[in-house]
Length: 487
Image (cartoon, rainbow, N blue to C red; front, side, top):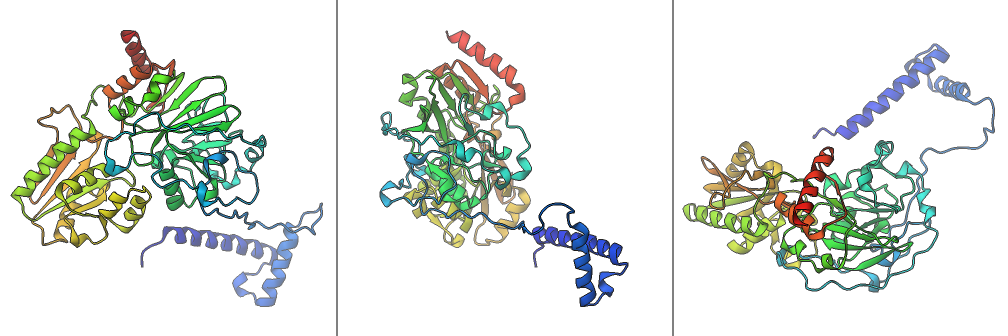
């Protein structure tokens, strides 16, 4: 039987409480609990109760430490029109006409890099009730308690509002009414649990993943459509822009009541699909909260399409050398889907995934992607595995478990694989007997050159780094040089 650390910890707690309880009883009765009969133990428990009884105050009132505050879960996600803090009331069920489609307005994986034309429809702004302060006084006990004493850094806040972005690890933050989640990656939703009881604003795909994986009730998830301005109350509004990072990932562009524009990029890849968005030419960004993951001149990797095309070419060459070739693609829980979808289309095959991965991919609302998936690994030579699986020992064992194949190719797509290679030497190839590992410089974050292009495109009045924040001064110095040189 597998060792269950949670049951083990629970057992330790019970044993510790039993030991303490026994020590107290022994102190009061001078007799071991194990040596007592039933009546003696009952009398000892009564004396123990009297021992802890308060001298003052009314003892008639009983307090239960196991009271549960249940919230009836709505059948659908909350609509755009209800982007406001929840009062302590029974959530309303939404009619079918108010449901958002699963496509969510974002570019699907199988549509690849196609960008929707036009600015996007502007919806009618909905008035929000003025009783928003009611939810902000909710007890922090239902949030992730172990994080509630940590101070939330300033770059998580939207200035001049009661909004924060990707700040769940800090628990319930005083005076915050709306929590925005840019995408479903652990470093952004860490701290978010099924007990979180404040409004969470995100895309349709992200809401589906949060509900499926974290069991957050749908009544607390505010699904916002992409490319539509949404009124948040108090003359503040927001529009979600596809971040070109992973399925469901968005940037939040806030238009505040003081007429300032604040852009939180979350994690994003600033390729042409992002740079060519027509919204940038119609606004002036005042505050840019920027994903600076690769803010280093060493990381000037190729665009995603170039990396994928080169990878497919090499895989086909290896396939000509080995008729019975098994292909493994490393992915994260969410991310790198374009790699295996492009391979499946190029090689005209199905994609084998585990059951939990299948459930995750179904949340994307991409029918073409869903139709290409299978749980039967023996039916295809293209398998998806976790990124951490791609090491020599595990790959050797995996190939041995499929004796019908003579060679294995493992694809490791990450921006960290790039180290100044030329286009002719773009892919890092490692050969080990019957195994070949391809390090593909495929990143879902912006390269150093793309960050520069994006900043020069927007020309914000102020830039706030959200990654590698300890180097904020140096990052701002370099960005200042960019803006001065181009002025």
